[in-house]
Image 1 (spheres, rainbow, N blue to C red):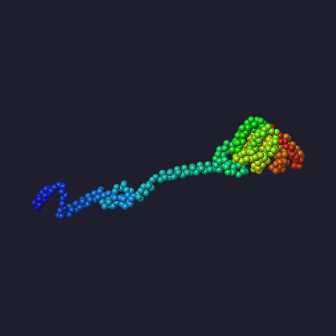
Image 2: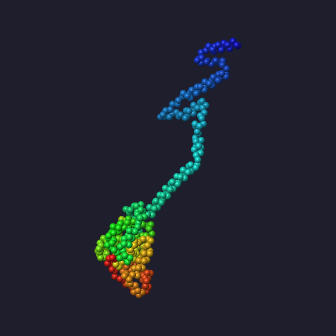
Image 3: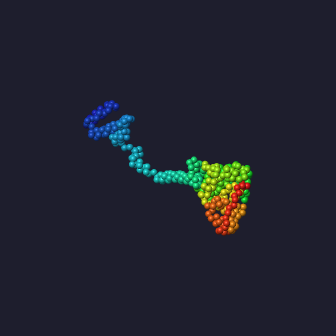
Length: 367
């Protein structure tokens, strides 16, 4: 046996180093098994490195993920856990986001939307409330823009007219037309101001009525100034100056008669307005030397009515005999039972059966 071992070692020593050893059919089973496993692993690793999948760009016949999975199964390949995450795990990971973040974003969005809706609602409400509509008259196409009118409404003022009245009308109602004419530009600006700021449906009754009284009186003064010097208003327009349509208000044209008899009287049902509007004649109730406003309307209506009824220049009242202005005859329907109405303001108690007549009207200019 020792001779066999020595001979084998000698043969191995003489074999070239780069020659691949031949597998002897008489090798032991363990040696053959080890050799087979080593060769198979080397072959599979070489296939993994060298094999490159062919993918047709147009047809996409071979899918890379599928091919990679097949190769990995062939060599018992296990990828690292941090590289591939199952779909169900990804969904769980997304659901793990802090709930507070999404809730806060949702709450912030709702707050922003709410603010926009509130602001839009407020703007819409302001425009709806301030849209200009002449009291008792329909709104026509072509009326001024509501948004522009809102600014003008807020600046409505009778202050300039009030200053003119204080300067050029005495306490007893005598008018200095020469003085008015020296500042006719101021009056013109006020008339334009009235035109730019018509009656609003949102105004209360007092503010509306004060507006119309100022319109009537201011345009009556302007009518006189356009023809001054003049002896009487009845000398103008063929004796019918109240029927002339020339008063411009918010794109509409009116006459003095329309303002008094078609707007003021039927709309406000207030008989005391006859002692507030002035027709520029001596027998007219005295022109108030201040502008009418919502604040002073009631007190001035009472004062003007009482002053006129008890002024002997206009009315002569005794218990059994009454001679009063023709105003009470022309507008009798506004006063109802005249004796009863006069007794509300008269300093002399008038008998129910007192004789009643009317004083001739003096149309000379009230200067």
